[in-house]
Length: 372
Length: 110
Image (cartoon, rainbow over all chains, first blue to last red; front, side, top):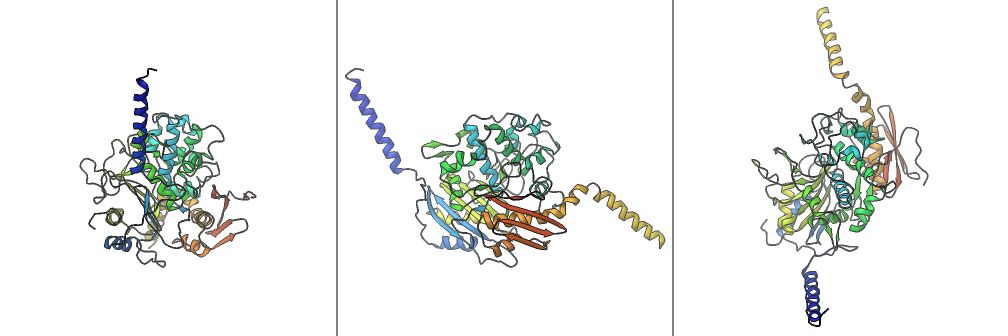
């Protein structure tokens, strides 16, 4: 090392430290054990939002919007929360199909650990799928397995594969039940939202891990690093996580998952999900043809993308927004353009709740300088 | 008259063959759905989410009512009786939550 080089290096080191410190100072707020709080100032916009999200609750006919919880996080800081009894800030609320996107985060962690590639055959990790050698993990993640699965349960309870999986013929071994479904079309050729695809993913995760790691994996890979303490994830009698339906946590904890996704898989100094994994979550299913209702499916997440020839699904929400959605109104919304994460738990028993209306009013209430 | 009866009977048989036979597996499983749903979702509502019993009773109510729900708080086991079937779910642990039990399966001692 020459005498000249030392001061230069010291200078550079000082500079680097200063830049890092400045970065920290302006920067990102992350929750510790609790969220930092800065409650939004009451306004007409906030009143309009609350009138929509928390109208008088109909407990008799169970009609209309029935929110159980709303938590809003802006720039990593909790700006709003409200609960409807008996749900509280501590209640581990049933997530229903938000569980699917949570499962995708687990797989993202396994992906980051190099445990699989998207084009690997699913049967490599879950042998009961041997009859479907062309079925790849990316197909399960895109809900394009092609398996002849019947998702509907509200209008076709008799033939619903979901009800059979959760409550009757499939309940002992849900993945085994899903794997028995015949191929309807070739994998990768047709999008068909399926809890069967999700439960199969939950089973492939078991095959990616060393024996004995599976039961703790959601906690080790995701919940503990994020500081999530309220999570429960039910399993079937075969020990497979009911990755399609049965995860629970409180609203504040679910918002942590939203912040992880908002920040492309980073959590503080740690990268929990590879950036290309989150990009896959947020890329539309290849060949998906827009449908009149609903968001665009991605890699086990839902996207507000305006696809060619179709309007943006939620017109009053930025196009880069994405979400995890569940039965009876459960939602985790991520709005990167506004650095906003919103959790909504609910018990909506009719279709009167509209995501677009809720988010339009939420943006007006929580994003400063925006007209209602 | 006789001819009309024959026609009616014929239609009924045809309907049974066309609808019931291909769906026989689904039909046989259907009465179990409501009981299993009630036992499992009540168990989780009560012992995972920690909601009050009366709230969970209302929460699991469906168009087709069950006859009776037995909640055993000591073992955190919930049994639903309805449509001639019986289904039980039990709470297994703080991370595992609730699960439907097989017929005759006892919840693991905690």
